[in-house]
Length: 382
Image (cartoon, rainbow, N blue to C red):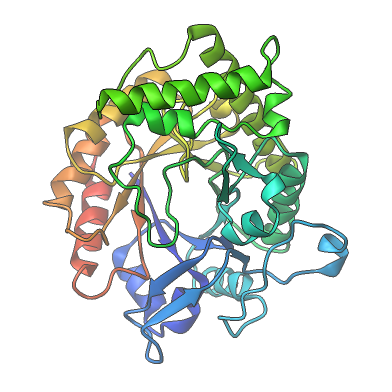
């Protein structure tokens, strides 16, 4: 299995031992976050700080007025890092050390822009805006993503370009002091994740938008009244469900097309996604056309167990043989993955050809042995 380790620019630049530890791991490439959402990230190896507080989403490449001037949607400049081109500097440092570097790009997850420009966000059937979720159906969002891509990769030697949140976000995602975990049944979360903004509603051919919103609200209340936290298959009439899903998928395909149009032909594309087409978030549901655009599709396998292994096997059956399956595995969860070596081995045997390992900067000395075990297991899979 090919191993891709994820890192922030400040991990590469602010840790004197980063390169040597990466070489010791013998991973195949380092994915550097060149555009990223807000976060508070621990820096266990930094000699000068314990964490980086990225207050907003940002681009870690220089912000050129020629590219962004006059646009409503433009990335914030990260004043929490000292270098004006920290992302580019990190990629160049890795390249100079002989370590392949990938671009890690995050698109529709941007609370700062969503708060400032709610007209471009996902809006649920109750009329509530999700400020963390830019809606792919909005032309301005697609233009933003395209420019973000072009500016992020400009002038860099990259082994891959990794696309995160290249699709819709929904009701269930991180927000300040999140208090919704475990509240919504899966079917309710799906309903609350259907975007009802004007751009999406215009694509509901044959349906009156007001009636659709009322249908969604009624179904939400019906499911809440049942107190059933399980998965329900009949959560929308079939024709309406097909219509809103088709709208979502067209918007997702359009967003991805805008991003890919800014990349050089032959660029190796890695797409974070999910087999379930209704999934929203950092790894959104794959559209029927998604696999045609990617060399690798990365699945969320953070929760160890039979379910994740079966998901990989299902993806291997469902996706074309020339598309690699990647397993996204974390070594920095609150509880360590039990026997991460055995887990990675099982994922590989199920069909995963790539291990996407989170996270080279966050995994301090206490978790670094897990990175070693996971990488060793990945390289041993035959």
